Amino acid sequence: MADVTCCESKFFLYLLIIAGLVTFAGLMAGLTLGLMSLGLVDLEVLIQSGRPKDRLHASRILPVVKNQHLLLCTLLIGNSLAMESLPIFLDKVVPPWLAILISVTLILMFGEILPQAVFTRYGLTVGATMAPVVRLLLWFFFPLAYPISKVLDWMLGKGHAALLRRAELKTFVDFHGNEAGKGGDLTHDETTIIAGALELTEKTAKDAMTPISKAFSLDLDGTLTLDTLNEIMTKGHSRVPVYSGDRTNIIGIILVKNLLAVDPNDAVPLRKMLLRKVPRVEDNMPLYDILNEFQKGHSHIAVVYKDLNKKTNMLKSKDTETNKSHFHDADGGVMKSDGDEQTKRSPPSTPAFKKRHKGCSFCILNLENNPIPEYPPNEIVVGVITMEDVIEELLQEEILDETDEYVNIHNRIRINMNASQENLLDPLALQSGRVLQ
Image (cartoon, rainbow, N blue to C red; front, side):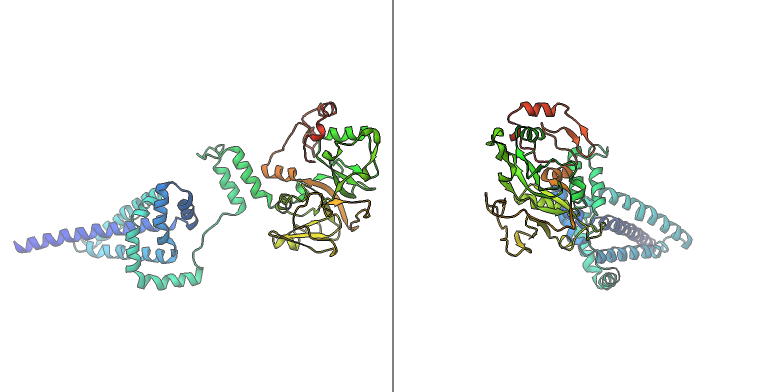
């Protein structure tokens, strides 16, 4: 009788051990899939901007998964020990062939499929709940798991965050738009602006400029007659380039608001008007660099030139590759910017333009005391670019105002056939404030 009771006790003990091993193996398999699928970047994003519950869960999981190779080795060692021990205890209660069959079935159903399905769906919640147990396992298997993890670190490198590339991030944002039908809450305008910001670094001045043949400009030797003022008023620009001799030889710009006090009956020569120096940018200069220069307030319009001495397929200069931008001023020198500090390379006699001065001699082009600026013959002017052009590339949409005649000036698509007549009848058109497009 005592022997029967002892056998029954052992039988139930073995069943309890078998159930525990299956549960432990399933837990290790589920944690391996659930925790290893949580990227460090994803957890940091959840900690900073997730829902309160997700923030709490992510903050508990992040310290555990920081050393990914150590975590992987610990979970796999625990899983292997449980699966290898299971047939030994099954052999105590059933024949060997049945022990193998039951072992495979239990491990497949309750040690692999079911736990991995649960952890795939609720990995963050279950992972945060089991974080203390995982910490305990890390210390328990540390003597065996740590050497293996260091070998993996040496062979494969330490686990590092997998960041999305620019194109992948753009597609990722598109999927989160409400128009994609995947449950995202980003509007069309939000996804468009984000995509424009991501693409802006790949675009250069030649992608957004207005070709010089389509840009409105004035001859330095002309006079401000009634017809000239009406033409300026019709265009609706706030700044107009001024050229000397050839249309590509733009030497400065004139602010339209300075023409308010001009009497058309006096036929004032344009040469006597107050002109401002215009920056010059290379056609392969990135739009981000141009936008940064525009933000400094030196000018909201620049002349785009092409250097014939450089290869046409060269996208960035050496200064651009080192995150430094440069503007050529009206004297032919180069304004280089690195952070907030600016220096002038050439000519050395011209003072550095460190901050904006209203009406300062560096900004104003004085043709009475100085000759007309000359530029290297290899620099061919190909267009004009403004802050509005750059912002349009950022927004991925055209910015239209009451003086625009075209939706797209490059394709000559009109939107307002009566713009010219309206401007001629409106005496305040000179104050429209439109930047040259």
